[in-house]
Image 1 (cartoon, rainbow, N blue to C red):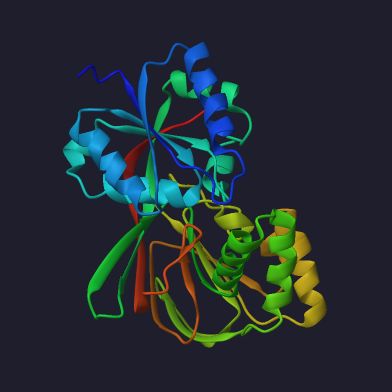
Image 2: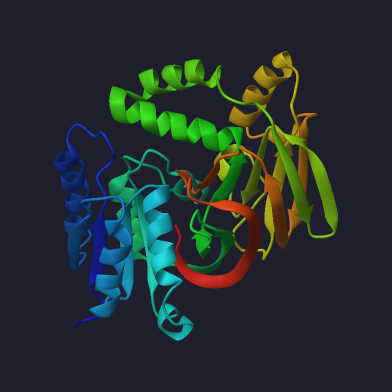
Amino acid sequence: MDNKKWGIVFCPKSGAFRPKKRWQKVEDALRENGIDYDHVQSETRDSVGRLVKMFINNGYRKIVIVGGDSAMNDAVNCLMQIEASEREQIALGVIPNGLLNDFARFWGIHEDDEANTVKQLKALRTRKIDVGCIRYTNKNGEECRRYFLNCVNIGLVATIMQLRRSTRHFLGSRALSFIASLLLLLFQRMEYAMKIRIDSSTIDHKVMTMCVGNAHGYGQTPSAVPYNGMLDVSIVYQPKIMQIFGGFYLLVKGKILNHRSVHPYRARNIHITEARHAMLSIDGRVADHAQTPFTINVEQEVLNFIIP
């Protein structure tokens, strides 16, 4: 086939009222820019990787995900399974369309701006980017490996993400799901016993939440960038009640590292031997099958990403 043709995977947003209307906007932008493409729609959460693999096997070299952080995570994990020489020929792009679009926002790519996003994708400016990698065992004792673009969360923030996804599924509304999540949060554990090694530093302490960011990490690792061969780590010890409200304010403002309960690190290798009862999420998706120990590192410049 002509490898100039784009392969596009459309991932309808969970709970979206009119997904066809969203795709129509994307399709109009593609046609206005004269893009030659084929597209498929993911039907389930687990189908994105399979569809990306289908495009790769059929010779497509420009693959664009119309989806959020979880869909991008599936695409990246598919790409990381192929030979490096083949991956070198492939460029990955994103048109944000998910509940969480943090990695797209890192690059200044915003939802509901399809015309400008497609125009920027057409220019095919690519940059080599890093991906993070977490290794763990599942409940069957099998060794597993998962790559991530944005971040890994362990503890309270992973719990909040799970609550928001669950309540959004049942309530539909973002506002209602956010309120419901805050109410349910009152009944959640607020600190977890963890044993952590960050390069040469050792931590044995009760932790509220921990974020390992390859990028901004939903505001928790605001200085992280996916092209310096390093991972940023933010560890939050249990703050006082009033400090929690201050922490949310700083999080929204992108200044969470200024909070007295937040301890930042920058490292290449992180090893968590204990995270008792703590939930784990990878690029916003909860990995409830994962068990400690967790080993997290970064693989430098392994992916071609289309940037604005």
